[in-house]
Length: 248
Image (cartoon, rainbow, N blue to C red):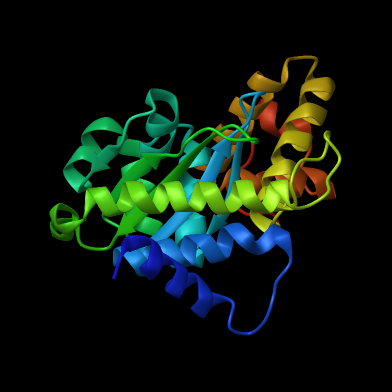
């Protein structure tokens, strides 16, 4: 059975309950990728033309959490793959050596102990990446790299085809750019913009403050951003470093 046939069969199993909205396509593709490659979990993300990292979909809640932790730290295997356009292999020792903060969070908050990230061919949305997660780092050498690259191509083709055969405003982008994880990340960008205005600084500095508050409180950036949006935190709280944990 070819890789394409195996991937198609895995994707068909994910859609056996009937068609789903276009925004959930990346979730189905991530699940099919994990099943085809025999890894513990997978996730898809993209960096758009403005340099914003957008999570598209994950095969599990733990994989989604791992992506949010990487965004909270602002560095990790997926970022490296997207920037270098080269695959990145990182077992636990590599994670601790290259991204110690991310490694600590990943170990504490997920079952994963290794990550392999593959850049995806650039398409309509920007530079994508496929993250593969492993609970046992000793299984990484068994990964079929050729199959992983092929699955990455199949994922990109599926996303491109979905975009080509649907109508969407140019300023909005394809529906699969607006799934649940992407909408939650958009909250961070809005919160950073509002905090920047309140503190009379730039959004990049405000995002750094959000990341610092999230790390200090043992949370993700999304958690802190949602508190800012809801009024449970203020921009001055960020600037003053007074956040110690989840808001009541």
